[in-house]
Length: 464
Image (cartoon, rainbow, N blue to C red; front, side):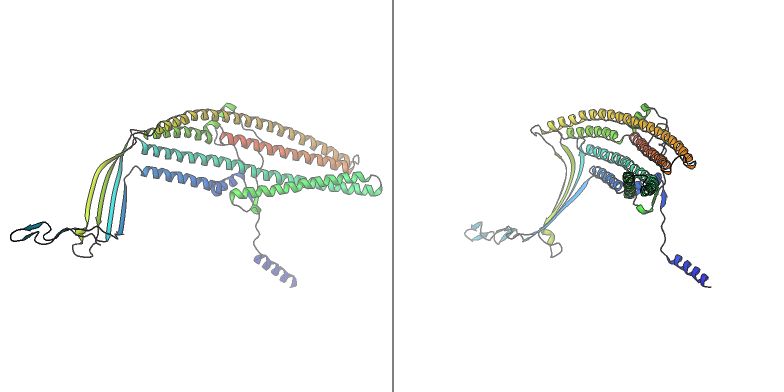
């Protein structure tokens, strides 16, 4: 009965205990998808695209009519006096003394202290020599430019996230190998201390192994801290809890088939910066047309409709209030332009022409830079692949040496320390292979970034 009660108590404790959260395995594809959706950096870029879209809508709205109003109400401290001709001011006709005028005549009454005015004005541009159309074209090009900047930011985010993710994989796997090395070194230290106590070795040999242990511990601390930093970096882009991350991807080892000429062509076609330079050229051309439309002797024409109401009496406040109010309607076509500007428009036109001419040089330079980046990325990838193959061969050799050392130890031909040294050598070769694999992964990602994460003939490079 007592044991049954203990079991029931344990079950209740488990049921009422806080939920245990286990780290979730996430691939690089999953992390990338979350980052594209949650990253504040991309949210800021999306906001910039939205603002550019609103700027385009604002530019298009200038093509339509605009209705404005102006209302005013005031108090006149000294209103103007009216015009009154009193009886007899114009003379008297003798002999009957007939006064002219016979009685006071008021032509204009004294003005009141209050004053009210309302003006409505409708303006519709008719012809502006391309100014409004040029503004719309520039706003549309600005929207396209913001989209290219968003694409470039996406590429940069993927590059940084890839480095953070696989830096975590490298640090985590390195820590596992370093822990094994540290365990073997501690076994060797025990053997040397025992030998030192027996007098078969001197103090220096013990100090040497302690130094090696301290170095291994430093490397282990470095790897663990790097792993924590990598998880924090991944969490920065994905808004995940670093404690709940378990990086499941592994380094790629195979090099896809490609030709350098095809990669350069693909990199040129997918480059957001080159597209941005091409767009800058279009903007320079549109700006030149806009500047030319604002030169002298190119006035703007517009349709104007104005309705004005003014008066001195509050409407419906008294009888005949409308006698103090005036109405006016103006319909016409207006124009405004410049006849002389001391050469300012000519200087602006020449500046715009110079910007347009320089834009082609920027495009040519960008193409050359893309080709050079592709060449260097290919060079780096080929070198890292050769280093990876060399490290793989070194691991195979170290595995064979470890097997022979183990066999010698089992046959009592070698000491435990010799066998431990062979195991450490194998683990160090595996560490080197891990580092070479990490370098190969980064080089492959860099080439992907230059090309635009697209290979000729396929959607994208394989991503673990």
